[in-house]
Length: 128
Image (tube, rainbow, N blue to C red; front, top):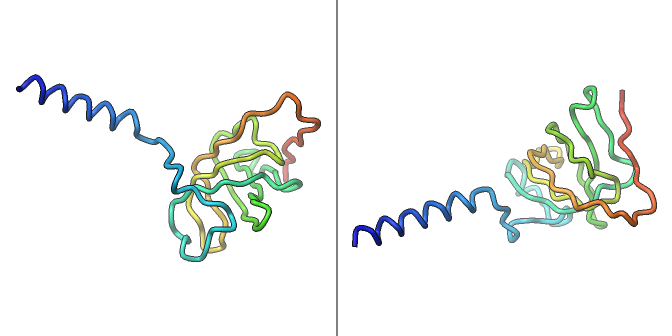
């Protein structure tokens, strides 16, 4: 009986550790679903990097872009290591906090894989 209890505790512990940080798909929103009630909340938002908006500031340490779902737009700032395939027109999932100005201070970006069939990719423009 003790072995069964011990094994059950180990299985539960491994499951919790293994699932730690897994994105909860159901809590992901689109830009147009956000309201003022989301201000100050940590959230996940899906959208596309709007053409002509991707740039860096602070000597490249901060990435700024506009996230769009085709119905609404939202500014995003991200000060972590930039994903290589963060490209205008590509899909991106943003995890962060919605600020009072209705922008997002992102803590995590997840981008889609680049397509080898894409006709043209827009590179980052520095605001310096």
